[in-house]
Image 1 (tube, each protein chain N blue to C red):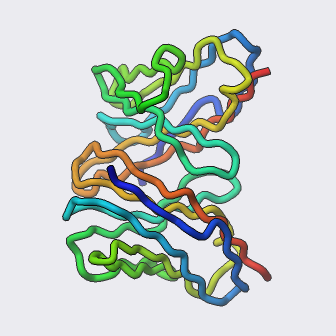
Image 2: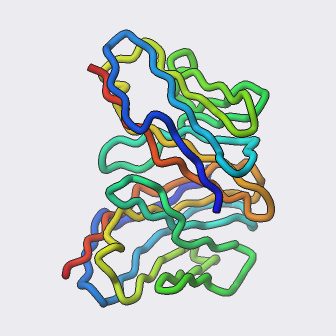
Length: 115
Length: 116
């Protein structure tokens, strides 16, 4: 079975600085998807970024970028120019290639942004 | 963008009663929906996979007779918590799978259930 590990339960960052959230996963599949989701205090799950395993290029979305190391099974999220609105729980997730595959979530990490 | 709604957003019920939570995909059809449970400061725990027109697939340890799931149409799935007890109090989240090519999961805003 696939597993996702987020080893840091909490992190903090100063506003305007950069922070990196770590995530490792385990799978025997070669094709899959990886995600970072944000859950602010409203508890609405928001997709931050998606990475297809077959793509070697790291995904980027504005201030958010990932470092995807397929051989190491590592998928970290870098948040640049951190903003107060980035404060939230962040979940790393894995999904197989099939259309109805379920998401496997990590335990999450609470990010605090200090003004 | 794809929107998933949940109703109600918050419900209080008395122990022993049943409560139904609706999950709707507003602008797309979803053959598959998922139901999650989330305790405070914890991750999402998948309860079941709901497929339109067929029985739901429950995760190990989830009581199918307590958590009844019905996916009657391509835009609606319901979760009924039967004979609710205080330990069923939690935050329940649904998600729906969109179409090709990414099959992205779109999440509802969640329902807070309090059983007194």
